Image (cartoon, rainbow over the protein chains, first blue to last red):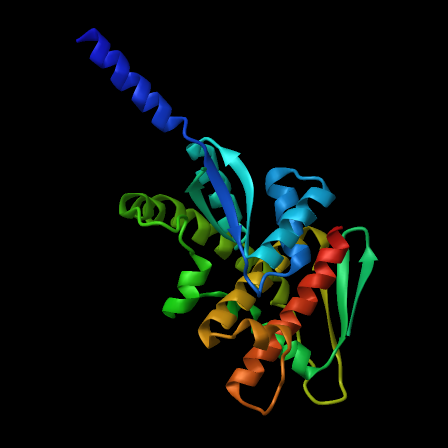
Length: 93
Length: 162
């Protein structure tokens, strides 16, 4: 019985620790400078890193800007939506 | 039209003709999604691509009201700045508007809301946005011009914050 409990707890822990990505999607309306600025404000990225992600969004249609715990990923998506970027969370591979 | 620094705390949008002045007065009205589904979908986009009804419902209940407040606060600041604004009345005359530096973030945000809401309402394609052709005096052409004019203002304000 005790072993079952331990196993269940381990599985739950593993599930909560599954990393989640914060993905920003391309949007032809948001200005490139604006997107770069938002990345710097929300994630504290240096200008070069913010521009790299912005260009990834622009060229590839999406960029993974952060990976980690789900709760924090949701908080980042909320902040990005606050700046009107198209952002979603997804399970990291 | 120009944007210049008046002093450490104020910017001035000057030499605005009646067209620019009218567009300025339409920013806040354009920024709300109203009852337009596409505009609302864009302003309050989904937080996840795969289906997760429970998470999406929680998002609508707990997050969207905060976002609405955030958007409304920015709109109210812009509305306040525009209260005393008198647009040029006729072709050939000009108007100006002084904006506190500390309000620039709210202006950038509200201009972005307006651009996104207008583009969603009119379903502009990426091609139309990137290579605009203002064919005739239609509502669609006016809206496309609005998106680009507001984008120009956004760029000007962003440069001030750099």
